[in-house]
Amino acid sequence: MLSRQSAQLFNKTPAIRVLSTCNKTFVRTKVSLPELDWDFGDLEPHISGQINEVHYTKHHQTYVNGFNDSVAKMGELKELLAKEPTPAVAREIITLQQNIKFHGGGYTNHCLFWKNLAPEKNGGGQLNDGKLKDAIIKQYGSLESLQKLTNEKLAGVQGSGWAFIVKNLANGGKLDVVQTYNQDTVTGSLIPLVAIDAWEHAYYLQYQNKKVDYFKAIWNVINWKEAAKRFEQEKIIS
Image (cartoon, rainbow, N blue to C red; front, side, top):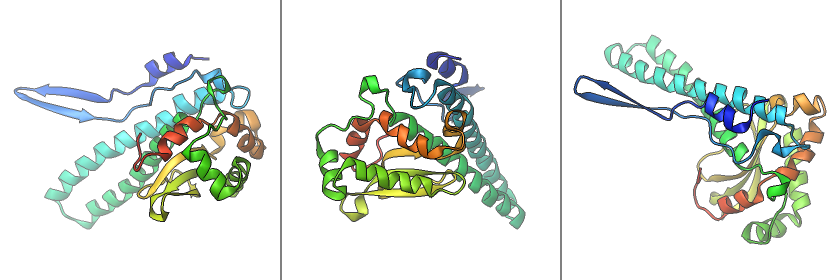
């Protein structure tokens, strides 16, 4: 098994590439895998090191590559559209927009996912006193009730998707639990506090067809400190 540091070094795409041609310099910006705050095996026994390694180095990397490739292709199509404003080019752009939505969602959702996980030894699973805890108790009565509701949303995902605990700015900053499919994400007035991956690649190597057990286990490594920090913001902070 690769260490977290080795995997990041091996898989990371340069965030910025600078190309010089004659007297002109072009800056090409690309997204890359985020740095993890823990090693792959640190979330065991709740999430195995093997799952984290495959999830991060293979699946998340695929979304990074897909998003970068689609954005680059979109630039080419916009230039082509300026020269050939035809329905054929327009259809290519529409198709590519779906790829950007899918891979962009996969990229951002997983960035949230990794950040809101923490080993138990580092406080994973522990909700400390503060504004977020007060809001949870006020709205749901207990953390366990919020977890139960979230697990119901996760279990209700048919196929692949996510569940997000969000702060809803359009509803006075109240908490809400949102279910999405595929790699759809939350945007606008919904500030994601916790993102939980319900795709099979997030659990199958360990839990196989018992995804409900995975939904229960992951609460032991949720980074509530990160969630509390997000709760006190009025915008997405990372």
